[in-house]
Image (tube, helix red, strand yellow):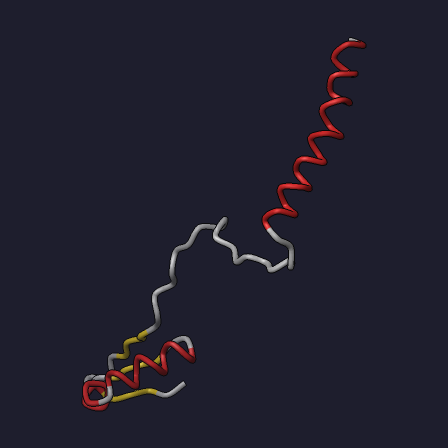
Length: 84
């Protein structure tokens, strides 16, 4: 990890931030030897925020699958309720 001086960091702030984004963090050292770490902030996101998957099926096919499932499930559910 590269350590920048305060003056260097001030002159190269944009590239320093880019490097922090790529490498995770960078350090800046002052004349008094105090060191600071710059790192990108982690983004808070929903655990339910997931990317989609292209299954190569159409909306009409999805609707058809749902209707077929209902036709299969409904008679079985009615048979269970009458036998109880």
